[in-house]
Length: 98
Image (cartoon, rainbow, N blue to C red; front, side):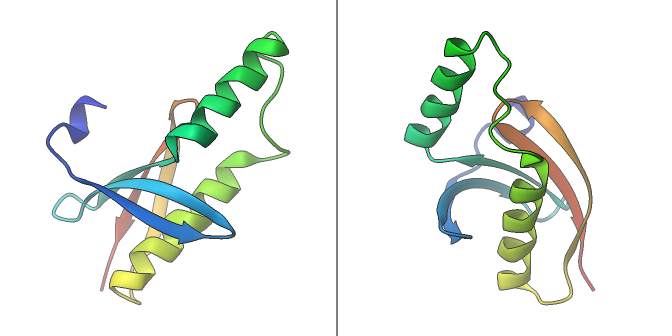
């Protein structure tokens, strides 16, 4: 999260869910997380299952799809190039445009 201190959070609707996105277009990176309520629910589910709950078969695909929709809403030429889990449920993605 230290890479995103001072970055304003943006809310974005995609795939039937509201996401919180911290975008740094000058660096071609963003961090994406569900809303605070959804993030708390994920944490509670993992706690109740001793960390065995992963929130779906491949949650990174859901996060990446939403990140792609977000950056394409700004510039149709943008696309995610890589990404990884920061801390559950926050992912960081790098992207290029043009």
